[in-house]
Length: 341
Image (cartoon, helix red, strand yellow):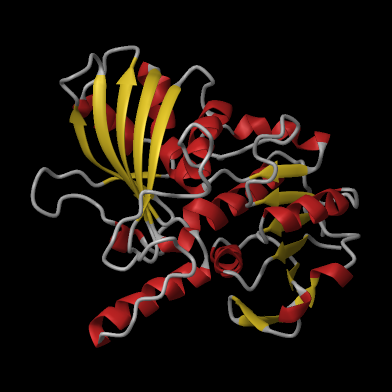
């Protein structure tokens, strides 16, 4: 019996990307199963040049399944991930449900691959928040070189991070503006087309939002608990691709040339940093790419050992689907899941 992989939430944005990347990277699965809620049963989803019929999560027997890529939201994961894990499957979850569970490893393979040894506690691995993911892929090599003390992060997040309905809302509002129709907002509290909304997630008592809180606590869990982090999340009228402006204070001396050289050698990072018009990456240009792009690397003269950088990545790819599949590849590499003939 060969390697069997199931995707829960196969009809969603991230589900489609998971299927696409499994095929692109030639993941050695002999069987891939597409799962979703009952209302999606019978729908077709593409897996390379094949078409899979969606089956119901509620009726599926996970016995004999090796890896489950869960992308169906926190409530579904909270109910189903422990049940699936009890069958002997390893669940790689894209929601926020398990990220701060001390018995669940939170993994970015380029940053903390050794944390995968903790999977045996619950058979669940958590995928970080998309904004945290691209941030830490870029910061890990800099932290190793000069030790980060403090981060100030401002994000400019695309609507696809909220889901397909948010993408539809941006499209519909943009069209309505051009044809002079009424602007309707259902997903976001304010108009997103031609606007910026300084709000991601739910508001907390201290005035931060849950999206900002995730970046703080996940950075500490994955990279270093001693790093001080403050974040501001904004939603922008971009369909796919998250951007981040990051101000970094280091413990040790580092300049922009050193940072540029370090990042050019870093796994998962591409440096596009010419000091000229257009010599940087934008979210439109990163769509469909695996890399985390770093631009605008420069010294911050207002603090000792300070740098500013600009980070851009496809939030549906590296920010969700690719990282999950890289975790699955790490399971094989470390022999935690074994291929059989």
